[in-house]
Length: 264
Image 1 (spheres, rainbow, N blue to C red):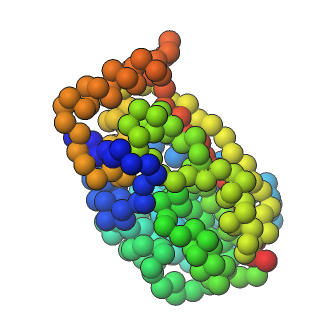
Image 2 (image 1 turned 120 degrees about the vertical axis):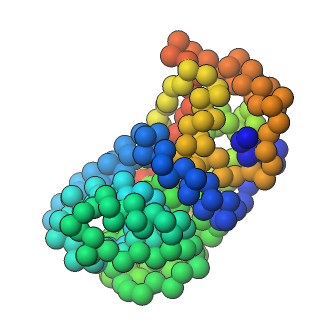
């Protein structure tokens, strides 16, 4: 069954998020095509903004199975110390297997970045496809500001207002996403924004059920509190097919937003 709710917007349940991403660990990378492209674009923007930047101490928030971790180590092979944080403790083993000889550089912190005590200051704080899950983004920005060196950079991606809007329109379920202007206002309280960019990514699936399977396989079905009945699934599929079908199947929209900033 798929978790849903009829109230909008939802406050993310961190325990539910942890469980769903843990359950999706084996299928995440196969389905996370948008998340991989978003990670690549984030690192491209970082390189374009600070071409000579060479961080020694890095923090990544929400490392998941290590997509961004591996790409970051490839871009910055001279990183001395790489701290990874994720709600799912078992991701540590997956990331370490993925990065091979770089494993001696890694410290893994299992838990909620909003509650964890960070042990260090960093040249670079990175996060991709994660920070839309936090409860208090202004508070987190204050916290990260304290743990970033004055010449350091904060580079992240998250998702905006139009993200998964098809699901929201049919099921009435979704997060309290910001638009890019609202995001810049929050981040701009503590950081000088060097880059702010947004994009749209449209994926196509053969059926609405395939859309739900994709969301489950990437851990994104972490919002609601109730499980659908078969009748509710059938109703969702019929309405989704009617509203969002095209020549390539049925569509699903992602709305990534990107920020690169330095401390004020």
